[in-house]
Image (cartoon, rainbow, N blue to C red; front, side):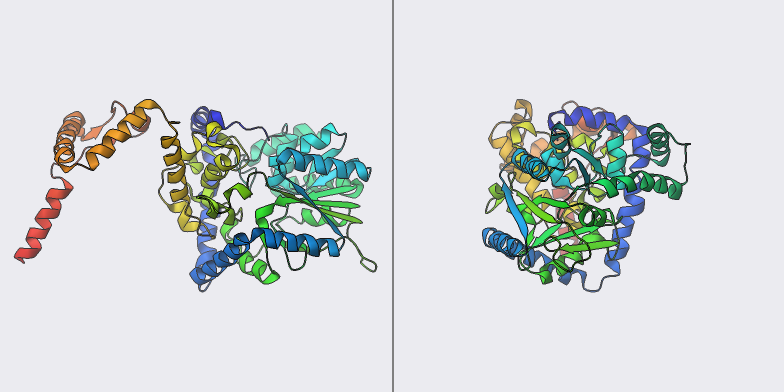
Length: 473
């Protein structure tokens, strides 16, 4: 997927002005946020379960090489071919080579964010392999001009039923339908022929399990089963960080994933795939491959952003993020949006080309509160901002202002009179409305909101008065 991260500000402005998008994004609060809250409330001992899952992920990541080698050995012992890719391009090339080796001409695909990193569809099409997305959301985006997903769990959350009805009528050459069961049936009828004729099935891998050499897949539509059972060849693509040591670890993490993602206690479909079809098996592929992508992941091991590797791609952080809720996923310009994307994308692609993403957060902390893996996203975003400051990647005026603030904050003799003066000036600017509508140097804030004027009494004065009152009492 081509990165457009340099255009974040322009894209964000466009999305804020899109009233239809603003209406569609309300689904995040009405469905995912409330759904997660209810599912977590119904889970006894949630914090203990979360702590246990975090510990299990930490164990896997602490000795990542050991568990990956164990997975490779167990998978190959069961007939799966394991391939390694350093870059997304290498991973895409490996899948193309597999298609050529087995003379595959039609591929069906289940939703995979790693395949988006790889630009896999374009690579296969260039090799004369027809690719069809079978996740309903991804299929809608594909027939809409190969539009990229807006969300890692609900890729088409930015569209409404009427838009999709128009698209289906235009693409399928059928009467326009707005009844959702009728629309999904229409999509199934189109996809059924693709399922039956494909010779390659491509999926992601929510996790891979070292002790059994298995790939775990989680979906709500069942299309991953059609992609892994019917075609002769099954290829799973996933990141190296997705390894778990045991099936018990998988069960522990799965108690959190669907609840955090969609508010479900369990996903509709949960598959654990171990090797190709064996003698006596009724279904399954003749050949199974797993392509493990690094793509910048191992560079995080042992570093300041290593905790990001615990991410299980549930999407809870973006569902609850006030920034994502207003601009959607496309504004971020690459595969991973929201708070997790604002850390992952700079980590994988470098801060130079993603300078706005670490700033695309209010640091309200909601993302950390809801993250099932307890990833301290606000802290990681602050660390990225610090790196930008140290490397002089932020505007000169901004760096000058922060240095001035830092100096004043460390010297009370300067800070206290400066605060008193600033308070008086802001109160004068606020007038009778007691609201500052345009603050020079902070137009990015006051262009969209008024700034309340400060109190006439400073915090230090209030604190001293309260302490004096307690002493008198």
